[in-house]
Image 1 (tube, protein in one colour):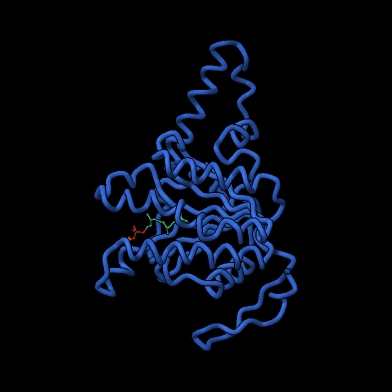
Image 2 (tube, protein in one colour; image 1 turned 135 degrees about the horizontal axis):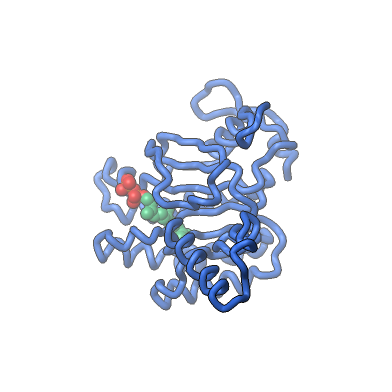
Length: 255
Ligand code: FPP
């Protein structure tokens, strides 16, 4: 799999080719998929057409990440703040997982992908929750790429819920304050069991975190592109990974 990227890969813009080392592939890539609305507007199309095309980009990113040897791919599909959008847009976004999985689940299974969901799933419409639950159950034993959808997810809510639950355990005596360590918090967040993202990608030129994985992104490398999410393809992932490989991660220490 990794061998495929060992070769020099041509960039669409005809500039310098991108070289990827197979030895330093980010284990966990997290993505803020932004710019669906602007992509549609620029073409005189309704915003939902942007989301529809964003769904196709999810497929391209998943396949590219899998080929590259990424182990975890977390996609920010719907935030706890996205409920503020017009009702029709929210409804459309809530239907997307069902549609995506109806089209793609068999291929994801064939590719050994494991689907996960991270967020307040109780707050989702039943059809969205059911679609995700079915995908999670049917891919549970798969050992390939972990495709983790952040759905009705908010970083602050995640931390708030975690703190509340730890507080309750202290109150009942199941935990003592000294037990609260970074490792324990890592375990208890919705991303428990997954490593922190090594690389965060945000499309559409915006440069903010928008309440995404606030704890987990503490030492992630950030990569921003002006490309709108519906245009995102393998070449952009490769560009992001090539840039990631040029960075020196110091975690607050010295080189
Ligand atoms: C942000 O773009 C995008 C979203 C809030 C939705 C992201 C969802 C998808 C890409 C599809 C998800 C697919 C599956 C399979 C769940 P925006 O609408 O805020 O764009 P704008 O900033 O240009 O308005």
